[in-house]
Length: 417
Image (cartoon, rainbow, N blue to C red):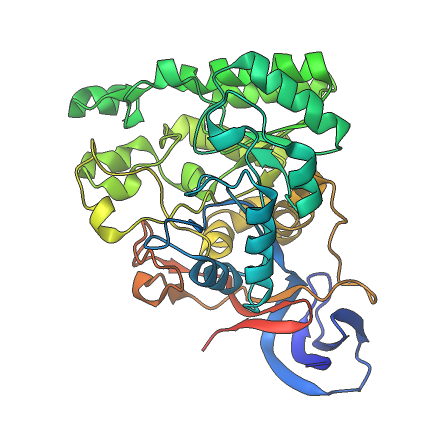
């Protein structure tokens, strides 16, 4: 399609129905009367396509869990136009050739756009820095050893300094591995009652405190992934008051679920970092409201159903959530956050974290758009997921805010049946 018009849509700040015309991948204008190919927006609300900073798409090497086709289709169905994929694959994304091949393959799929993150260290072993300049030049969005914690503070310091010289962001899974030990859930009353090994909140807070000191030392930009505790958020809040260049994200599952869910002994609720207490979840929401938390990310982590049906000690960490992150957040927190704030947390805010241009709906802007149905309730049905991981902690829930259309680069990437 060289020209595409979406009719019967509303912009968030306006009540009237409008149409937007897209030509050669950019927004040509509003209500121009030049149609071309036409899509009916069904009265939905149009917004810039969502941006995801933290998703595990499992390619290369783990495609029984997910691959680029299924993962980017899931992203488009969730309203995402751009996805940053994590490098803890097999092999690890620590080679510029792998970065280039992933981008090239994704471009041929016509789904959500892929921006691969590259490993900070070779093999994500935390011992020797990867070839960061070459990885950046190949198209890496940021550097991270996510999937592993950065135990060697000196190596992380060197990585931060090198990344700063390249004007790049380092993203970390801030958790002290020794304190975490073999914990499979939050350490607390519930873990004690269930007799399961716990992961204390101090494991996250202690590592956040260390990493913030490295930011103060290096002046480099650090992004903290999937914060889960009130204490870690307090540390970030204080660091921001001090002017440190730190950003952080929280995930829908840490906002909507708690360690009480583990009383089911269902490994579907096993995530890293673990589901915490209701007090922690409330603190994370407050962090969204007061601006301490910079953005929302999913930590989409698909596994096979057989893996997640193992017992809690043996099952892998992680859940899929790309397809329902916006509906879940809108249904649960739309009243507190408001539409403008929620959209910012899932579009412009992730772009700001990585220093990208903020997406807009203005004429001349790239045509990455999502049309959202903010009112109709639909049931979460994992059997219909585009992801290979067809299970969900929210299965059976009625949610509002489902994407109707997702357009990426001026081309239709998803249409809800």
